[in-house]
Length: 103
Image 1 (tube, rainbow, N blue to C red):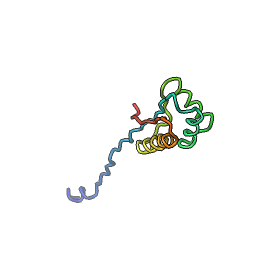
Image 2: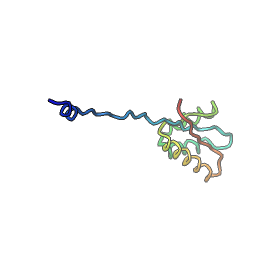
Image 3: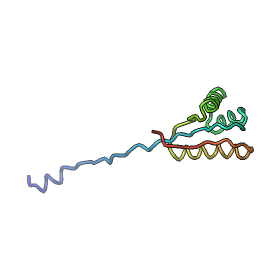
Image 4: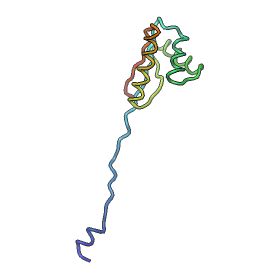
């Protein structure tokens, strides 16, 4: 067997190493003007939370100043934050959702 034949028979498969996409947190920021019921309604509508989970998230943001609502891919996080903030603006409330990279 010549070197040429051996070189043709040996094939190495190389898989490219793919990094997992960076995750982003959607943060609910507390304000003193938006009614609690409205905040829970937005959490239910946009983030598909139950009444109970929405209330817990809202109260955590109320007590701590902010709260992580969900952690997901960047494009989904930004879309959800914008949708929730836009709902509040349409209703005339200053409710704000932001995104930030997960540590």
